[in-house]
Length: 151
Image (cartoon, rainbow, N blue to C red; front, side, top):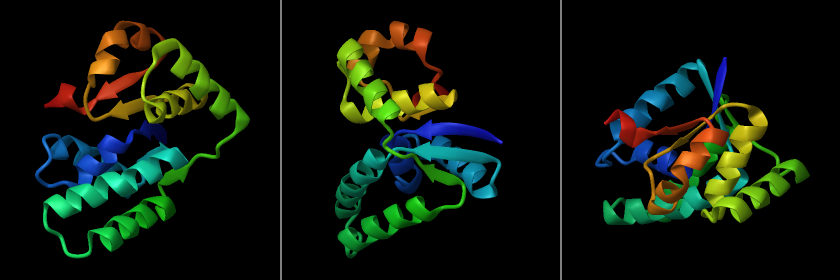
């Protein structure tokens, strides 16, 4: 069974039916839900997902966005085909090294570090400006996938 590291934007996109890349994210989650793909997620991603979803749910005027976002994070946390990674010293040091070399958002550094340590792809929603600046170098070191490339 294959594994991928998912960035927060990919998970959020899977529940945002109005999201630009919802279709692509849904394909990934269909594979996760069928058990044919294992998602690897950092604990930081769960925290980031909580506030991102809360904002999305507020925008969509969903009742009790606090509870709905919390419930979805718990669903992700306990999903049988999603593995929440431990914050090992190796992961912490690798994320710090990536932060130093590329000056990316810390959550992106953790996703990249997890993909490197687990020898698998890392999936991002789209190429943010800061990633665009170092994309060529990142591509040499990491197996990157962007939902926007499958639009």
